[in-house]
Every structure is written in C-alpha cells, then in structure tokens.
Amino acid sequence: MAAESDFPNLVTGRKAGALTFSAIFALESLVRSLNSTVVSLQAYDLLGSSQKVSELTTLVAMVVLLATLMLPYVLGRLRRRWAYTLGVVGLIAASLFFASFTISGQIAGMFLRNCGAGILNITLSLYIMDHIKKSDLAHAEPLRLSLSTFSWMIGPAGGVWLYTQFGPWAPQLASIAVAVALLVLFWVLRLSDSATMPSGTLQPFNPLANVMRFVRQPRLRLAWMVAFGRSCFWTTFFIYGPLLMVESGVGKQVGGLMISASQVLLLFAYVFGRLAHRFGVRAIISLCFLLMALSSVAAGIAGKEFPYVAMFFLLFGAFAASGLDGVGGIPFLRAVRTRERQRMAAVYRTYIDFSDLIPAMIFAVALSYFEIGIVFVILGTSLVIMGALAFRYLPKSM
Picture 1 (tube, rainbow, N blue to C red):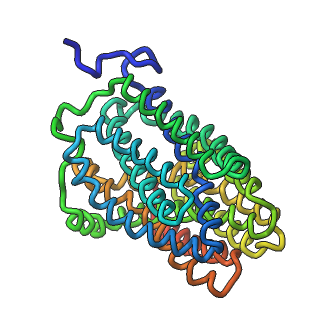
Picture 2 (cartoon, rainbow, N blue to C red):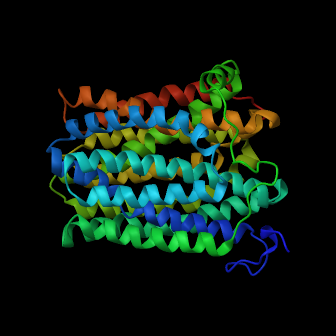
Picture 3 (cartoon, rainbow, N blue to C red):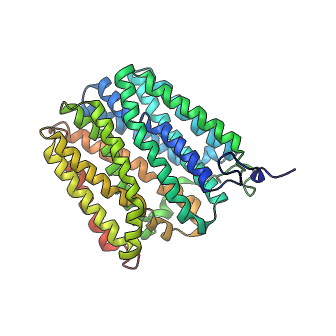
C-alpha cells in the first residue's frame, strides 16, 4: 500500500508542493480576514470606547500568551492532521461566539480565534518543512505570501460590509463557510504526518527552560525584537486604524477598505527582498523601522481632525511594514541552531502574543487622558527605538 505522502493532491496533481500549501494558507487567511476588522469594530460597539477595547485586548492577550506556551503539550499528544483540524474547529467556534454579539461571546471568540490561528501556524509550518526542500523555500514562501495577500485584500472590507449591512451573524457565517471548505480541502489532500514522530508533531518540553535558553542568545533576542516591532505596527494598525475612522465620523466601511488596501502593499515584500539582497538585510530592516515610525507619528498628529491624512500615513507605514514582512524573519532563521529550531520557534512566536498584550496595556492607560491619535504617536516613538537597536546590533554582513 502506498504511503499517504505518495497520494496526488487536487491542487498540483502531484505530491504536496508549494502551490498546495499556498492554497491551504490562502483559504486559512480568508477565514481569519473576514472577521479581522470586524472583531475590533464589534468590540467597540459592545464596549463604547477605544480605551475599553484596549482593556479587553489586554485581558485576552494575557490568557492567550499562557495558552501559547502550553500548546506544545497539547499538540505533542495529537497527530498533526488532528492538530490542524483542532485549529480550524477553533476558528469556527470563535465565529459562533462572535455572532452572539455579547461581551462574554466577544471574549471567548477572541481567545479561540488567537489560539486556533496559533495551532494552524505551527502545524502548517511543520508540514512545509516536511514536504518542501530548504532550497525551494525561496520560491515557496513568496508564493504563499502572494496568494494570501489576495485573501487579505478581500476579507477585511468584505467582512465589514457584511457586518454593517446584515449584522453580526453575516461575516461569521461567511468565515465559517470558508473554514468548512478549508477543512474539506485539507482532508482530501491526505497530507502525511511525520514518520519520525508517530505519536504527534511536537515533543513535550519545558516552556520555562526554553525561554531561558532563548533569552541567553543575543542574536535570538534581537530577532525577536525585530519581529515584535513589526507585529506591534500591524496589531495597532488593524485595531486602532478602523477605530480612528469610526471616531472621526468617516465610518466603519472606510476603515475596512483601509485594511484591505494595506494588504495590497504586501506585494512589495518581494521588492524589499531584492533590495535587501543588494544593500543588506540590516539596512532594509533599519529603513523600514524608520519609515514606519515617521508614518505612525504623522498619523497620530493628524488624528481625528484629519482622518484621510492619517489614513495616508498609515498606509505608507503599511508599505514600509511590508518590507519587514519580507525580510524581518531572516535574523531568526540565520541565528537559530538547527537542532533547536523547533523549540526556539515556539518561544520566538510569542512576539505575536506580546504585540497584542504590551501595546494594549499602554494604550489603555494613554486613552484615559488623550484622544485616539496618541496610540500612533506612542507606536512611532517605540519603533524609532527598536529601529536604532536593530541598526546598532544587527551584523553588517547580514
């Protein structure tokens, strides 16, 4: 009997390859993008202020961070296909909670959405490492990012339109429908589990020991900071960008269109990659941080009084952030030791959870005294510091 990895798949007609995983990731991205902007707008509708949205985001991020560090224990007991299925089911359950349009449902939905996305991120990465050669990643990863960009171009604006026209259930039903399609595609493809880990995809490990191991390596700390800065920009952009449009009176749909427009700019990630090849990764990372910082401060100064000016600067910042999306992961990939890649990757990924947690905590306090533009000023100031550290300590040869 042939091994499962020998089965042809519906996307390529051959063994699972770059296009297969790009198609899976594009569908997964569409599931999440359909409610990405809706989540913050609905929280605002339920709670009534940006400050309370920050407080809620802080609360959920703290719980998700703890859950993220425990994920390896859960996933270590599951075969990879069931782990991926669990992640998709988590996204479906999140949509059901969001659709209830209650504060308790909002909290549960945000938690399940983040945990589900984390499980999918880890398991899909392991599938890619099993099925795609390292020499082919330079082709496979840009293809995966490009196809997912189309999902993010459609999803945020489409989700907000459904929310404003038909109510809380509409974008969630759309997200659930795509999630079911994703799950059907995934099981039809019959992707094989790793033969070297028959009991699961991840070995159980001591989270604290791995965190300490990670922190003791300066280059890994620096790589984490670069990823954290990039994620702070996108988190602030996705949550507070639409809220700025709402509070200025421009409207929810304009906020959704802004998010979708920003994703078109991710197509420039390839251009930044070419520039990094010519001028060096350190130079491009430092330049992107500087442009993101200046754009964020300018958007914050424009604020509610000049919402379209603020939108322009936020989109320019998104353009710079696309550069970090293209090259920002290189410091980690070059710094991590091969034998530690799996364990260190789990710690490295906490930059996502901390970028949800730390800005929200700071913004919750700041919004008690200032208008919403202050969050972008604080963001820009922080990005200047992180960009300076990157320029100072990243190797010149990188």
